[in-house]
Image 1 (cartoon, one colour):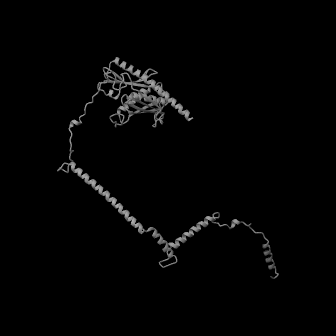
Image 2 (cartoon, rainbow, N blue to C red):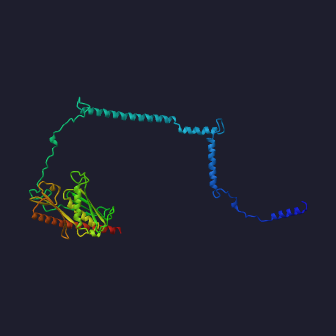
Length: 400
């Protein structure tokens, strides 16, 4: 190179560039790919899958024309194997034919049995129908019965008292039936009770005090409602009518008998609902319903002045029967009945329901007899509540 000023400048620039430090420090991240920098394995996997899919499509399905090409033997081999898998073999055809024959034989057997049944029914129909009758009319029955066989016979009622001076079930006139009481049998109710005598069974449940579903105006006193229903199997004659007027009347009488004992002022704008279901009715269901509802209210913790007991009796001109059964209630010699609700501690009558005529002296005697019966029932009610309270305390202690 000639020693000229221009060449000297060029040589000075190149020598300085050789010894000059790099403009940017060496950074390995600069050589990473811009797309999926941290997912190289995924990127390779996706590219391999796409490449394999394209290769599979090109070998087996891509159209290269009708002429022979390099992928034709592979395609013949693969599609031949696929047809062999889907096609029916000779052994399978034999099995299917035998199976179809068996099914046809079973269908033919069923048809033959149906045909036999039809011929049998036709023979029976021909035997029942009158020979030579009109086929366009419905023939009458082959047998007839006289009208007298459908006539109802009168019931034969036994006298109320036997020769020994006792009733049909062995009780005296002023004797009540044995009674079983139990409180707290319905778990979801606030209070409940069960009462059972010979032939009469009741279940009572109390819900409340609680707010009513519908909105009502404010009232300083609570409301007591009652619903008494009879099970369809509670009597000998099946009960079908749901709008039974007798049940509604008895429900209102029960509310009237209990209202004088409940402290309604302690539950303003609250509802106390009483539900009574008669499982079996053998007479005197109203008195037993009042007793059961009183125990259920006490079991629910409702504030009450006293327990309400009840008793009932029927009478005629000669005798008065306490705690009557269904037969005694429906006896033709009975002329009237009396039901009484009583508060023993307050010595107060909360309800009195009487049917039939009687002298004043006999009325007073009947009321006195019912009050004595209520006092006997009151002791049984107290024992029932005491036992129920002890059981609840024991359960609480066991849980703790």
